[in-house]
Image (spheres, one colour):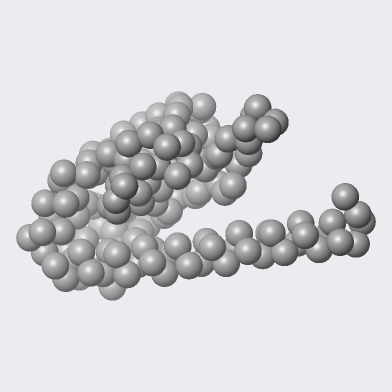
Length: 157
C-alpha cells in the first residue's frame, strides 16, 4: 500500500496523512484490464473512481458530425479518472479506454460517499486536490485550443 500512496502522493492524495491515504486505499479494489477495455462510456452513470497504477487510459468524446471519437487526453500512472463519481449529476463527461494492459485501483460511489461522510478532513483535501488538478487540465485544454485557433488564423480554414 505504501507504493500506491507514493504513486498518488503528488495528485489525488496530496497532503493526506498516511492514515487517511491508507483508509482511502484500503477501500479500493485492484483490477486489471486488457488493451481496448472500455472502463466507462461518455454520459453513462458515474459509479466508480479509478486510480491508474499502470498502463494508460485515453479519455475520449464523440464527434457526432464526423461519426467518430477524439482523444482529449491520455492518463498515466498516478492519475485518476472518473471524478464525476463525486459530483452531481454523476455522469461521466468522457469515455475511458485502456491503452495496453492496465491496472487500476477502483472505488465505488457509495463507499467513497460513506468515507467522506465519516472523515470531513479527507473529503476536503480530496475535493481540493481534484479542483487543483481540474484547473491544471483546463489550462492545458485552453493552450491546445489557442494553438488550434492560432494555426487557423495563420493558415486559414
